[in-house]
Length: 79
Image (cartoon, rainbow, N blue to C red; front, side):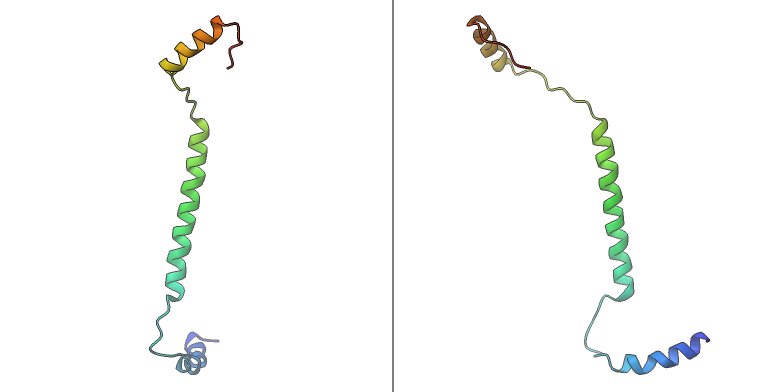
């Protein structure tokens, strides 16, 4: 079947559509799918990179002075 024959079969279907109705169509779907795929790949990459981060926060000076007082009272220090 040639492309022109296929189009002649689709023309009557197009006449049934409302010409005042605007739809995103196939191009809109492809753009949305590409954006969704890009976001998915970025999130996957971000999770991989965040898993490599080894961050240890510096101790809080106010908490350190409180731990010294608590340690002097005989309590155990938590890690």
